[in-house]
Length: 380
Image (cartoon, rainbow, N blue to C red):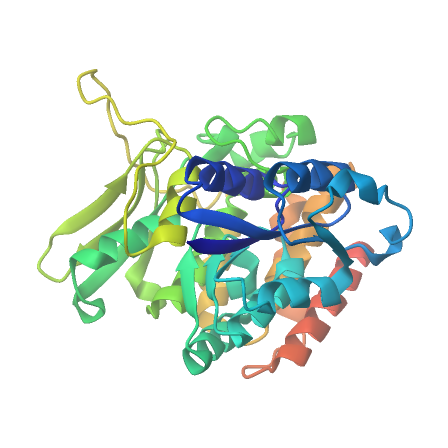
């Protein structure tokens, strides 16, 4: 029995994860769930699955929520201490980190310190603190299994060879809702337009990241640390059908691609069951019907955010923490109507160019740089 804790269970990754668990009642059980403030939905999830713990990260809600909605089998906890108790509990085998943004770092860190398998859906954890996270996992005997569809695809394709035999990986991108647009056209983009993704159903922050291609920039950085690659071994291709989720090329020229319908339940399930494969509650590709697979290079002039990913992956140090914090703040300002679409990568570039770079930071310094970048972004 796989005993699972889902951090961010009320988000798109979290709800998909609960669907996977529900589809395999004899193999998986839910130990705990967490949310920031969505206590009513968290309560309904607790009533359905009867986990041991439910955690509300916003401590200000203590004493303000109707605890009866959590049922009689679930203990309600609050804040960082609640997350710590959930992820370190001896009954927890796997921690799914579905919290969006740098806020997911603390839960991931605590789970790795406890030697758990961590199914990482929070790319920002590795963007901010990739070297420290992977070193901690190795030291504590923990596992880091990717949930992002692109990194899961790379992870699956890598099983066809040895790490030293990899020539390069190719991360695919749908291109978002503005594929083919010019920089001038993008200057007029509204939040409503940016939130209309053609393929994936995601939360607002991740959807805007897809529209700017900042999501792919963050994935480049994540891939460097997750797979111990040189930056020159990472490429990005635009693939609008979102059928090929990424590819690995080996030194002999063989290219292994992972293909599936665009449904996050498959990579989530693989992270939970690896190295085994079991039936999944997703559809299949219909190869009896004609369809095409298209690939094209990304337009770095229209989408300069992607270039930042390669820059930050090369620099390392505090650059990832600053880029991530600046982007989170810039996306929030864009969604509030206080910043233009094209200003998102401009703000990030400005903060990267002017921050106090440290090539070998510890976790406290990374968190300090995160806070400072957010404050600077509000003044930009």
